[in-house]
Length: 209
Image (cartoon, rainbow, N blue to C red; front, side, top):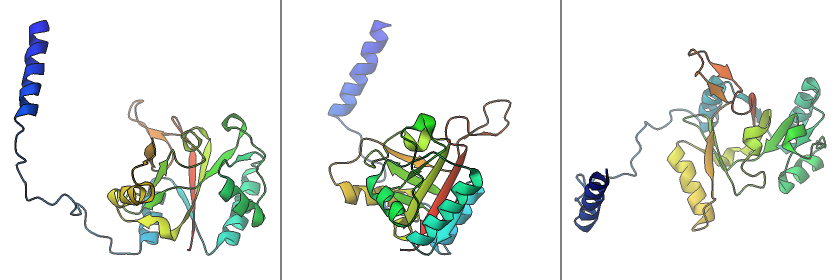
């Protein structure tokens, strides 16, 4: 076993000393793999997000969003809603939504966060550890509510990652993750089960602006 390990390590060292040239040196890795969208990004995102069991709402402004959020919270009888992002919490409170009584994930009915961007092609939200909501809010809350603006829409994942790179520069967040609809698994007899490893429901309120 020791000789085999040494042989492998020696081959790796040799490869590092004499690197193999790139087989397609003229290739342009920035080219899009997928065809560009043929419709507005708002529509493409909404279609792909709802296909994956996400619940989507388009709002003309922040006040309309807060009103729709209040209607949803009342209909679902949510009395404990968590929001750890100070700026978002202040904006919602100023627009009339003040149902922030939860202080931790264990006691909340739903959690509200922002996102870094929305990916139209996959219906995904890109989140990062740089957000005040942190790493666990969008994972451990029973219901995840994301508030985003149309200016955050991008077509593909690479476009969203480029936005993060432009925003943070050398200080990239320690975690960048994709959230695509509610948690789902088909590990048990290939039967789709929703909400096993994360939120059972995911809402996206998209605000024009």
